[in-house]
Amino acid sequence: MARYTGASCRQCRRERLKLFLKGDRCYTDKCAIERRAFPPGQHGQARMRKFSDYAVQLREKQKVRRMYGIMEGQFLRYYKEADRLKGVTGENLLGLLEKRLDNVAYRIGFANSRCQARQIIKHDHILVNGKRVNVPSFNVSVGDVISVREKSRKVEVISDSLEAVARRGVPSWLEVDGASFLAKVKSEPERQELTMPIQEQLIVELYSK
Image (cartoon, rainbow, N blue to C red; front, side, top):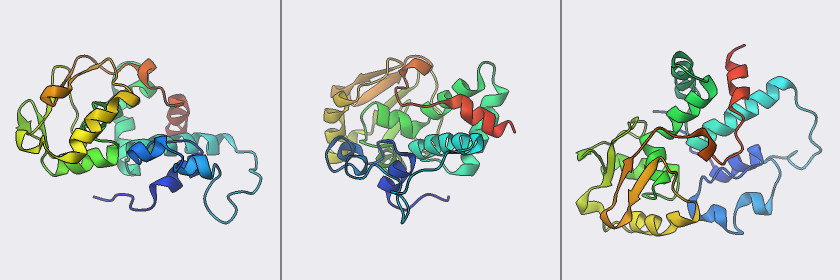
């Protein structure tokens, strides 16, 4: 499967926003946005021209896609699925992205970033309802129990991440028992709990053209 292999910090600088792609580093002075809050490249510091409506919509889509670490084709499939569901398409889209297993593992503190979450999932460290799942895009459902395999509970990356999760908080739709290395999906994700500045309606407008 295709994936982005370039510098993560360039993506944050391109969007002029912390996307929290590098875990704890994003909370320190080493964060690229703190040091160079302008787009990468030779003309990054040049005065920005006014964006067209299309450019604004495109940047919003790219921001969300990069935040969740998803390639264009897969993101489009999520949009089409969200459009088929009942309710508001933009909120449906964010809900589908939030219920990805890699995002859930990040939210509950099994990893410091979604990229790191994908790695531990692919390495068979994560169980869903007691069964190993090594597909980061796996969609969790209400009532699912996500846990760390018993042999993996001593992995330093996972234990350190659980200690640091208090800094960003755990959404109310997830219930975490850190001592037992498990979490439960209590309900569907709530739009108001997504604190990142996302304007999902712009993405809907982009794909509706």
